[in-house]
Amino acid sequence: MVRSIYPYELLLLKVLTCCVFAGRAWQHIFWDIPIRALAWDEELLKTPIETLTGMTWQQYVTSMTTDAWLQGIAQGLGYLCVACAVAVWLVRPDRKWAGTLLKIGGGYLVLLFLLYWKERFQSAGMFVEHTLQWAAPFILVYAVFYQKNSPSFRFWIKVAIALTFIGHGLYAFGYYPVPGNFVEMMVGVFGLSDQAALWWLKVAGIVDFIVAVALFVPRLARPALVYCIVWGTLTALARIVANFSFELPFESLHQWLHEVIFRLPHGGIPLLLFFLLKKDNR
Picture (spheres, rainbow, N blue to C red):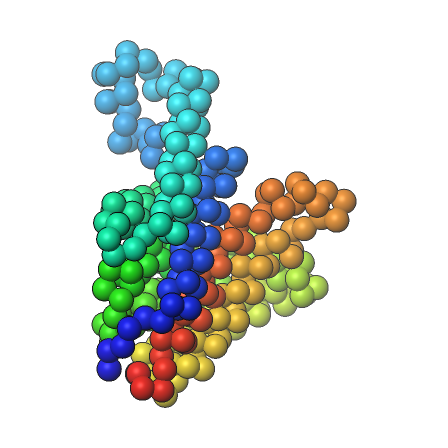
């Protein structure tokens, strides 16, 4: 069954998409992105750099000017994210320019996560874990310009959620080396030992895989979404809970709050889908 997207559902989607762009803007402007994973790829860029600039590769990678340029590019992309965060609140059916800007922003997020993929030894899990973030602006554009809660719309949201949780599960389960910050968050939030944290992460990874499949089973979709809402939100909040220092509160917020904000769609978009799956929908 196809119905219109309700205003509160569209508002939630706008809030979540704005969170992605606002959090990433903060990261770009004040912290860093893995741009050097591409800019310092010797195999790919050594010949063009030495041919076009006259610099040796060693001069290029150690140059303060080069580093300043890379930082400037990162900050400029951060202001693109700021513009997209504003466009979220301006987009409507008669403002195609805002929709175009959001598509550009979404395209850039895809490139950003490809940089993370390259930095992390081309691990597919690194890219798919962020699917809900780069998909959010595209979901919003569809919702604004088509305003249809169709089965295909819900299906692709399920795909984005499933990919995100599969990506997270691959790291939690240990298919890829378990990130140190995963263990630190489990220890910091729940007070577990390192060994217990690894065990519970493995369990969480298995559940992530099960939930990714359950999303596509009509009778199991809602319970699966409840898990996604709770776990996706907790893993986002864990960034600040595990790393907050009462001795340095502002510094802690500056360093970690943006990581919470741009991860809120990991729990928020499952909440959106929960609303979209009314009794008259499957």
